[in-house]
Image (tube, rainbow, N blue to C red):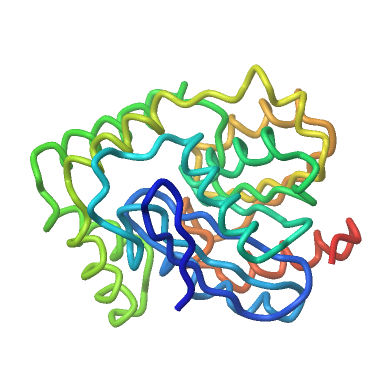
Length: 258
């Protein structure tokens, strides 16, 4: 296990492989276990998985929820500890907001960005309802429900689902509710024109809630590729891991950012 300190919080990260770092950023509560199937990408880069504050192996006693901007600084702290000069930043779902913020603040370090089910702001009816449901359930301290629904929506493997379920149960529900709120309020759409590095968008072909967000990136960012992964809705990294990994691998080869 490796840790780096940020604002008095110990942030867990794990590294596998060599070459350009591929830093994976998870959604609220789900921890680095979200990307257990992405370790296979260590054949093309240095896979780096992180537990954001309050999640997984990172310090759980934080006095407040970390904003999207502060979470991006946590990723910067990890890369500083690694002495990495460049990195590919990969965010899944609300983790994609942190990836965007990192790229906007540190473009010189960001070799490329991958957003899996990404969005620049919450505007659609159903995504709005999903965030509000998460805030409400966490505020009600329904962690048993949350810790069941999220893993079983993502993993076919019962042992992998059970492992994530245990991790989610340990998350502070008040901080989780606040984390959902901060993600709900985050906006990058007015700054997308500043994203001049290569950007890969991965969406599940059945993830109809998210598809329209693709146009925001294509219209405003400078170098965008879009891949639809068939046979899956939102859970691309865990339910179509081979297709997800291959799309990232091929994009890296095309963009020559190995």
